[in-house]
Length: 85
Figure (tube, rainbow, N blue to C red):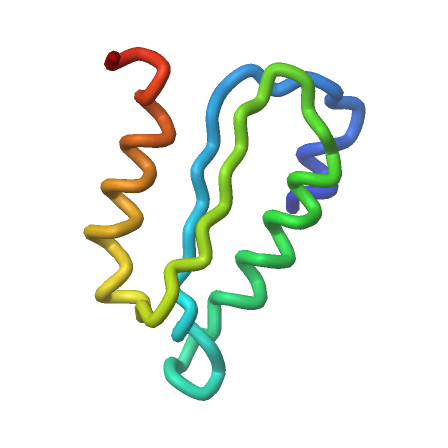
């Protein structure tokens, strides 16, 4: 779990991009991910790891299947923006 991972850790060098489709809810799918992902990201962000660049995107009007191309593009931009200029 995230809590076990965080124990004793103050630094986490790297970049992390997480996204979820806005429509990944109990009303629209058999496995509602939106709340779980948002809850995870809030907990992860609250750790304030040194050396970590973190971004979360709630993809408006997207479902699990439709979010992939948008998440991929946003993730690549987030991960590599500082390296490709």
